[in-house]
Length: 172
Length: 334
Image (cartoon, rainbow over all chains, first blue to last red; front, side):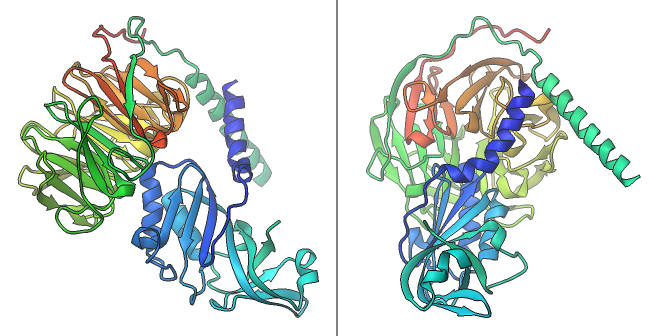
């Protein structure tokens, strides 16, 4: 029985991220769904780690640009619209605090183009480029989108790669 | 050969798993006379108005039975009568004296001063019981007088200060003049005297130090000079997280009553567990929920001069007050 509970506990960690609905988004913010049980102390640690990142808008969320909802396991960071979000650094800050990042949600505005067989969307203000999944985005090639919600999975982030093209999928 | 080694390692992991499971199901003797405390009242709800909280973290009581609560999302401390009637509040976000940045656990010393661990200011701030700031000490770092995200604070009879130094994985000690003393412990798991993100400290009436070794899921007991005495939580105090009696899922706070019974806030299991001063299990109360005697991620506990128990039910943004535990002699392990 105990063994069964241990296995269930391990398995539940894997499915935890899918328990929640996709969060709603405002412009210039990134929401990160996280997993792993942590106490309020660690949550404030994550907040401290994230608030040191230089692409945050620190005029929001109590002067550090970070909002953590422990119950919803959701972290929101207000971003400086003129700067690229370094997903790798966000991941490292969250992992260091004890949470495990699962998915990033953000709005992107710009023109969707096809280049070298890749479908790309570069954000107008941050100039961050996202490579969209071909099946989902083929029909949007050539169009200009405003606040298109994209999702970046943890597996799409290369911890050694900073600020380059990030693979993303479209929100359903 | 490589494959043989892999199979051997897999077998080893499997047998360790079985061993732990068997140990975890070993009986723990509780007290047959100790009944669950009765719910008396509750106060607080989510918000920033006076008397409301957003995920409060710390609670303590003075010798006049006035209750002090840290409300870090609102960057303030609130003071109440023991029936929950609001008295006053102080603090706002900042680094200056009198200001606060993420106030966490707090305590009242024998000198009637209130000591507050400020997580994001990396310091301890001392107030009188009316909220006037008297002094601050500690700066960010891992040196002898430095702190990194202090989580909890306790004062001994002589005025020495003990701090749960969260990110430095140690208990930092100060003289009553706030000069440094040798710290207790260092980062580590399993072994005695090693800590993994300690969040709270308390000193019992008989002057022993108990540390909530949060991410080792255990409590450790020391003399005030730092000599290790006991540890419990999980199998043999190993720190393995669990749901059974005597195991914890992040032990965020510890408190000791007048009879040296040790109350542990079992954050992830939404309950309080009570032990004797040797770590023998006595009682558990609370379950997940938002009704009376139910908790959602509790963060702290305090006990007043009459033995009434106040649990800081953080996830429900409230305080619940319970009747004192009866005084009985605990049974020991067979």
